[in-house]
Length: 245
View 1: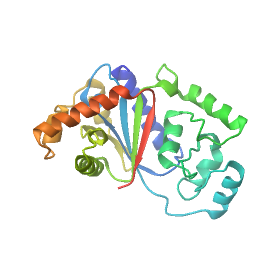
View 2: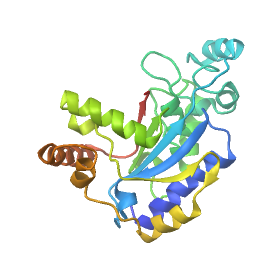
View 3: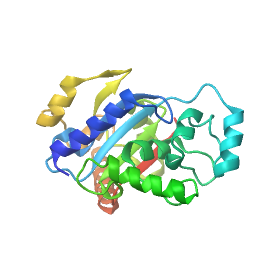
């Protein structure tokens, strides 16, 4: 993906977070990885969302939605009003409960997921049409090289937590690239950050150097960088990961 197109895509995500109802409240939007480095073209667009949990529940909405679509947790894990307005974008985890990160991906990336979407022909067709209508990359939204990270913790806190866990398990491919740029937080857009992102003007270290600055031994930092490169090479199309810290 060309850098300009990638920045356009993440700006469109910020536009929608600002202006439209989301499945869950969103506090922050970050870009990280290749796009923060100013590479052109980039292999993948990496976007990080900090979400809030819902404080109120709606038992009646949850029961009604589960009865009609077979998805649990509406009104508890995702907003009932959003789900009722967008049943074609509701996504569930393996346990049958609505998955906030998958719902955000469906809303912001317009990625249909046949195994997770409510199982009615009308809803399936609506999801496919939404993917085509909302694609701004020039490719099918399902094939766009975009990865979405969703967590209740801020980007920096999650970088630290993921790094600790990955190093303890030697699961280096689970490390979150710490080279990120905050584009939107607390309802305010950082126009200067967007401008610098478009110009490729952020001075970012190499990944091993960035990890070393977080206290990772040099040899391990190199191994982590290699593992992440392998992980990225194996990815295809859009993807999403959700975390709780």
